[in-house]
Amino acid sequence: MLLNLSVKDFVIVDRVEIEFASGFTVLTGETGAGKSILIDALALVLGDRGEASMVRAGCERAEIAAQFDISRLQPLQTWLIENDLANDDGECLLRRVVDSHGRSRAFINGHASTLQQLREAGEWLVDIHGQHAHQSLLRAASQRALLDGYGGLTDTARQVNEAYRIWQALKRQREEGESNAAALAQEREDLEWRVQELSGLSFSTEAWQVLLTEHARLSNAVSLIDGARYGVETLSENDASLIAQLAGLIGKLKQLREYDGSLQEIIELLEPAEIQLQEAAHSLNHYLQKLDLDPERLNDCEQRLNAIHSAARKYRVTPEQMPELLVAASARLASLIETADPGALARKEHEAKTHFDELAKKLSAGRKQAAKKLSQKVSATLQQLAMAGGVFEAALLPVTEGASFGYESVDFLVAAHAGMAPKPLAKVASGGELSRISLALQVAAIDIAAVPTLIFDEVDVGIGGGVAEIVGGLLKDVGAQHQVLCITHLPQVAAQGNHHLRVSKETHNGATLSRIETLDKKARIEEIARMLGGVEITAKTRAHAAEMLGASAQD
Image 1 (spheres, helix red, strand yellow):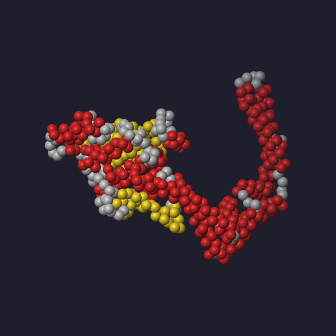
Image 2 (cartoon, helix red, strand yellow; image 1 turned 45 degrees about the horizontal axis):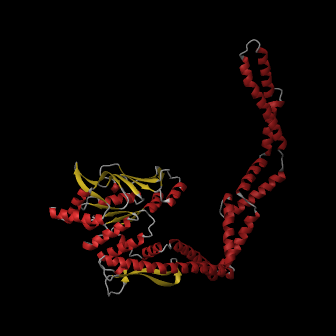
Image 3 (cartoon, one colour; image 1 turned 30 degrees about the vertical axis):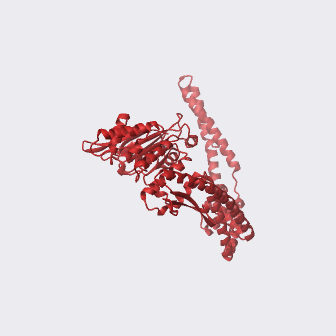
């Protein structure tokens, strides 16, 4: 549930902080006061695209923060933990900053996050139904998604899509094998030679580095032997060796120590050096014993290097890339071998199609039940919305060959009045009717809404009178199950709210600013009277407003 929204320097809002409660909250105000701007701010903090034009004129940045109670949203809590974005108080704070150059930053619970993470979190928290939401319902994909969501079939639809993709990939593979048999046979032969040659090298990146090291050592063996011998002689075998000279110096200082005890500190520094030189001489002697001039082994190394370099030049790769080349060639060869066996490939294709059929039939059965229930529920709601005799039908149209979405397309059909033949929703002429049908669909789908907060931005456009009162009642009913926020210009809807926020604008130092306040009962009467009346609000208008609020309070 949305607890708090803080907006700073966003469009015409300088600074606003709003506390929200559960139930049905209405937002009203004169046109241009900034009602929809608050929804835009919330959409931005939920991951919508940010632009420089969103920053209030003369300001460096716009900042929006939204705080949510997620104590009952276990999936979101788990997601936050998995992404190292969680806190321990059962709440979630989303924050978005957009600067005057259009650059944007996002934060979740104080941690820097990506815009995609902000969107993912927002999908669990808020569902915004804009005033043009009905336009998306004209698209076949949106209608299908709504029906699948209503029937709890979203996961099954996703499985059908994946099964169809696999089936089609195998089908294309079989067809490719049948139509390009000669070319594929030649490619297979070439790959067999390539895999045989590369496998014969027994090559790996690690072995390549070992070979290079060994070759460098063998090819420079003479220099290594000479250097090691020189080191041994310098350290220990010459008459004037370093160890002998250092031992003599230490002995001389020890004789002089009886005259000046401060020499002991220098002796203690030199004695470890003598030990280190002795160990170095011992290690060099051991290294020298292992060094050997091995022309035969050097020749073997050079032959292997030449073979590897030759293969790398042949296939136009570096030696380090040859293991990847072998893996790719082996995978392609295995695919071609499979393609060369039409029977095996046909069996795999048949298995994939059978799996798709099983899932698609399960999806079809679920859609049939969901379509019947949705049609009945939306048709019943239309009767309340001044569309007496109106009929809604979620029609399932067969797709014989099957598709990524199954064995049927979904088409929403509507008869706006009794005696009319249902026709596709896209052909409904009246904008007001389309708005009411959209609202009926949204109300029906709310039963399966997983998000706790639902926002309606002027979805009541095009209606009025008794229908508006019914719309307000429907939204209030929804508010008993979810937190509902609705921007409205209709007093019949506003009077139904459990809570009422008024948005207004004022001019300060030449700048137009938006203001918002929570209304008590007296202020609500004045606001609803303003929505009912004309230029002058009369006592009769106020009495009407009070009557509307009183009737609503008794509901």
